[in-house]
Length: 302
Ligand code: MN
Image 1 (tube, rainbow, N blue to C red):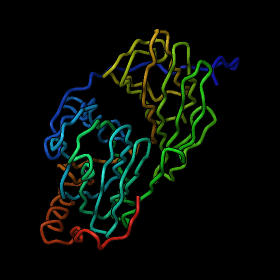
Image 2 (cartoon, rainbow, N blue to C red):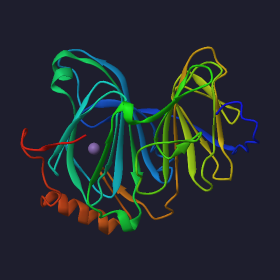
Image 3 (cartoon, protein in one colour):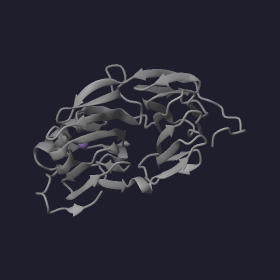
């Protein structure tokens, strides 16, 4: 996929966004390139959080206890640690390193996302990502849906100089990921060894960006390093990510079809209007989004 002889038209870089640190959930710190005061969303993406890497001692690990979602999708991709989830549909499971959980909240779920009891007791490294993907108005009230894939089930390939590309959703460099997305979206993770390059043909009109979480790369010729997100234009053309440095670089590659709809968001709810937000709160407070069954009664699912 690198050193392609085919002319690869590169989209202009629009901005380089610095991630900021933010305390989330039960008190864990994330690096968050967006949303910020200036950038509400990168349509259709509503949020990108990097959780850790954090090395917890015994008894220190924290997560996000019971909370609701409605109107969008939460996508968890874990690199280190183990996260146990339980929800109001009765599902529970453990997300392990390299695995992804694509949860379509739709009409609503109440769930918890917590370190496993083992990590709670013994400590360990936690590192992963959560992205939020918006749903079209017509899909906001669909039934909840889970798609879980282990590390071995993600599509992957070795790069020219020893790095690796994993594709979770959509197509990058001819590789298509396993997730069936509700609206067209692409999600990949590349570990670029020195000299590695990815030429990514982004679907026309899609929002596209690259988030660097280790090392340094160039994105369509623009330098970017650890903690920076590079947003490219929606013009036709692709994205070339290259590692000219002497250490491995780690990046997420994200693209999606913009929904172009009004967004009303507050906390865990993302709707189209303020009235729909009020209804979401009312439904949650009245218990209509359900609650998490007692441990041991649910169906095991990732
Ligand atoms: Mn959640």
